[in-house]
Structures are given as structure tokens and as C-alpha cells.
Length: 85
Image (cartoon, rainbow, N blue to C red):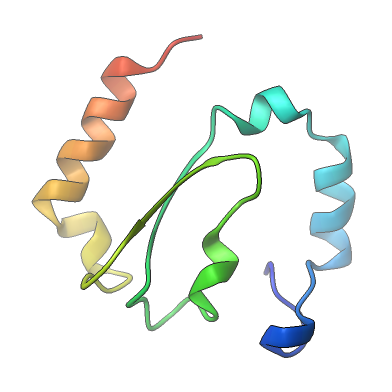
């Protein structure tokens, strides 16, 4: 959804460009993107990096396994508990 073209020439889809134009930088700072460098579904993996968000890259965990990995689950629970409005 995010990446069009080759990696070197990649760009966001028109829909995502329009959506991004309506987002405020402060709102992006509340978004967390946990992504894996070993994801075999999202490609390129760097497209999971959202500029302005809190990006947390992990290694050695596949796409589906991210949801089942205890350390990731604990991280998400901690992030929810520590969230401030």
C-alpha cells in the first residue's frame, strides 16, 4: 500500500500522499510502528518506517510471528499502559 515502483525509486501511493498531507506532526508522534527487518510479507521492510512516528525495528522475527512473540506482546502492552493523551 505504501510503496510504488522499485526500492530506489519508491514513493507513497497517491492515496497515502493525500492522507499524509492532512496529518499533523504532533499526531504522528503518537504512532508506534514495530517492524521487522526479517519480514517476508512487507517488502521492502523499510516501507514500514513512518517518518515522524516512533519506529521500533526488530530483527529475527517474521511478519506473522511479530504478533505471537512474547517480547513484542510485552512491549505493546507496556506502550499501551504508558500512553499519555
